[in-house]
Image (cartoon, rainbow, N blue to C red; front, top):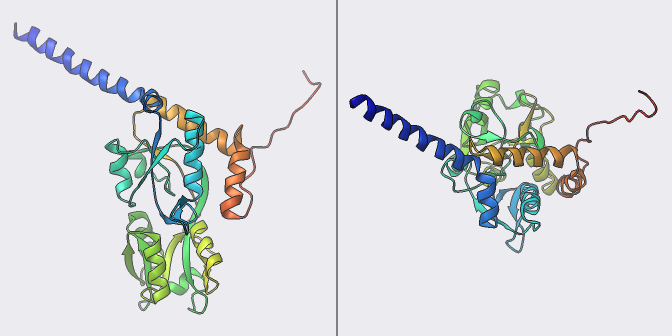
Length: 277
C-alpha cells in the first residue's frame, strides 16, 4: 500500500513538472494571445533608451523592441515598456514581469546561468569617458590613487576597473545619466561606459572624449529572456539572426544608422556559383 502511495505521489510530481515545462514551452503562444509584448528597458542610457524633449521614449533598443512587436502582431506599437534598473532586469525576467529585456545587456557566462540570451544583436566594448583636459589619454593614466572612476552598479564593470586600474577609486551609480552628471560636476574624473554610449555622450558634449582603448576586447549585447521557454527562444533567436544578417537586415541597417551615424556590420558574405555541379 505504501509503495502504491509513493508511486502515485511520484507520478503527480512528474505531472506537475511536465505541466510547468509545457507552460514555459508555450510562451510564444501566450504572448500572441495577450496581444502585446512587454519589454524591460531603460530611459536613462542614450542612444539605447532615453526620453526626448517631449518625454517620449526613444533609442536603438526601443526600435529593436518595436520590430519584435511588428513581427509578432504586424504592429510595432503593440508593445509595453517597463523601465528597469540594471539589477532589476534579472528578477523582472525570472518573475515574468516582462517577456524580454532589451537594455544594452552584455552576454556573460555568469549571466547565462540565470537568464537566456539571443545571439548578439550589437557589438560593443568597455572603456572610459573623460574630460578632454583631464590628463587621461590612455587607460593606464587613470590608474592613480587620486582618480575616481564612476561605474554602474554592475559587478562586471566594477571587476574590470579593479583588475586593470587597481589604484583608482570607484564610485558606483544606478544609471548612466547619474555617471555623466558626476563626471560633469567633477565628482569623478572618468566614467566606465560601453563604447557606443561613450561615443554618444562625447558627440553631444565637445569637452568630453572617449579613451581609444577597450578594457578586454569586444563584448556582445543580447536580448535576455527566461530560461526554459522553448518556443519563445526559437522565435527570439530566429528574429535576431534574421535582423542582423538575413531577411530583416534593411530594418536593422536603418535603425543602426539612425542612432549611431555609421553602418552596421555587414551581412554574411555569400558567393553564388552558377553552372557548377
